[in-house]
Amino acid sequence: MSDIDLSVNIGKFKLRNPIMLASGTVGYGNEISEFSDLNKLGAIVTKSLSLKPRKGNPPQRIVETPSGMLNAIGLANVGVDIFLKEKIPFLKKYDVPLVCNIAASTVEEYVECTRILDSEETIKAFEINVSCPNVKDGGLQFGNDIKAVGLVTSKVRAVTNKPLIIKLSPNVSYISEFAQVVKNEGGDAVSAINTLVGTAFNIITKKPKLYNVNGGLSGPAIKPVALAKVLEISRKVDIPIIGIGGIMNWKDVIEFMIAGASAIQIGTLNFIDPAAPERMIKELEDYCLSNQLNKISDLTASYLI
Amino acid sequence: MLIVNSPVVETIQIHENIFIQKILSPEIAHNSNPGQFLNIRVSETANPLLRRPFSICDVEGDNIFIMFNIMGEGTKILACKQPGSSVDILGPLGNGFNLDDDFEIAVIVAGGLGSAPFPYLTRKIGKSKKIISFVGGRSKNDLITYSMMNFLTSTDDGSEGFKGNVVKLLEENRDKLDKEKIKIFGCGPNAMLKSLKDFSIKYDYNCEISTESAMACGFGICQGCPIESTQNPDKYLLVCKDGPVFNVKDVNL
Image (cartoon, each protein chain N blue to C red):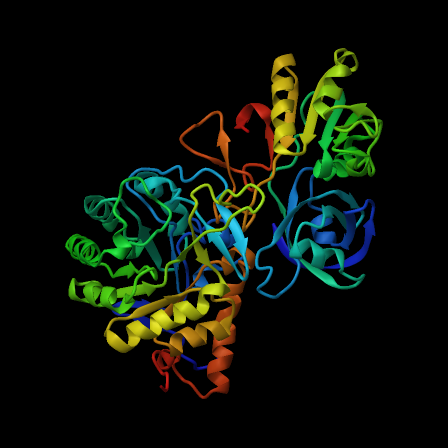
């Protein structure tokens, strides 16, 4: 046992280490538990939940791109009621902080979902998805609308005392302005970034490869963009940041923390190597040891610019 | 469901663009059923990023076999693997063919690379059941009869066997299918699976098909491989976890 302290705080939300698993890449925990001891992780974030079950988009939903992938799942999920009834019992068996990600088409739906889930003690925090690029059924594109992001934050804040994280869209000019609004309206932290909007075509049929036409780009291809967005928020706004975007190994974790992240989320990598996040914990410890770092949290925003 | 690094034993080119790769992987070999699949990471680099899904083509002792054609970077890297170099395998995945049904004759219907899961099925039931195989392709170079038993062939261009698609060939031979208990096992392009489904429903045959889809993870978390369910129109099934083998009555193609 070393004396390295890997714990981090995201505002009032304390994690045993900075490794979180990102929404939409761990389902509701059961599949990933075959590869990884969930109890060792910092936190897991559920697939986006909506008030009612959502079927999601027809195929094709996934396209691989250079060093990345596009997805247009369309928020397929079981809905909050079935989640509480059928998914929570499995998650209760674990000692890993559970973050519920919520997606909705209206402000009222965000509030209602949060209100219903708030009384479940297994849920330790909320992450509000204001930035899914793949749903178009009349709902606002909240993520691009700074007033809507502020409104969702304040209304959801009013119905929960649990840590409130807003997941920001990178598809905006200045992400730090959105982070500032989240802070002003009582949000505890931001996660950055959600996927970048992208598309791909079949050059024979001239049709888009995705049924939804556009999808969200993730994977190592977006890491430099994500780092720049984290850095922008870190330099302009005093709010805890959870860094997300193309993390493939422990070095990427360190890089995000240096750029301003208090914790990080691993997403696309879970599809490829679901055992990798657990491995990284030891590797982070080794990095701290060899760099005379007693607390990994000292890395956050330690950039020298 | 395991993740293992396994060495390639050999790669054989059986057709112009079709390869069979033998991989030493006892952990996977001893736990696999016909119709299940593997999700293989061909390199540790970020490009190609995702694993590639392959049917388990055959299992012999501690070895597993996959069949593939070169479609892009991933399969090109795979085809060039030297004996002793390793592949990272996630598997075995999904549900294979149900062999506990009451049938006496297994009718295999394969189109193109859809032959991939059938050498293993043939090995598994060849001694206890009668097998009749129908193998189709666009032309004779696309016919894959590797390790198949008792087969008839069809080609779209008539360059070998029956001229026409493989389901038409099946229909032509319906007198062979009437006497005893039949179960049809199909795999191939979607258009072929659709007409096989129509055929099976028309004549009330028990029929299972192996489907394919683009996917990322292969074990249910990415939700990337939906297929329409006939039972519940409000919810998609997943090819990776609920399939890839389905009874034709359970899915809309």
